Length: 86
Image 1 (cartoon, rainbow, N blue to C red):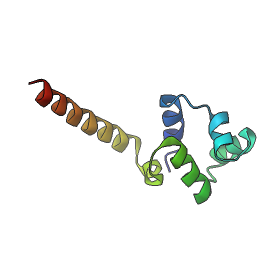
Image 2: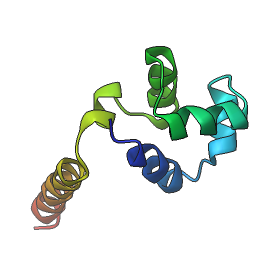
Image 3: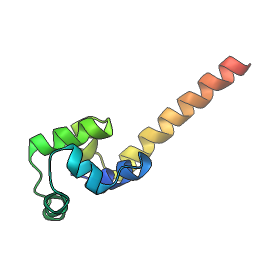
């Protein structure tokens, strides 16, 4: 599981770990222990996914897969803009 993706998404959405922990019903300490120990329950992963607006499967992608997907979406958006502008 790609734990660093949680931090990346939190940074992008300007959500602190403390805020994320509270939003999923955990203490900040418990949240950090879960992340450090890589001992996440499915229910916690589902809650984190919901708060961050991604599928739980997102966290099993490698960082390079995520980067490729971001590039693909960005290229598609550039093409749409180009078509609309002319």
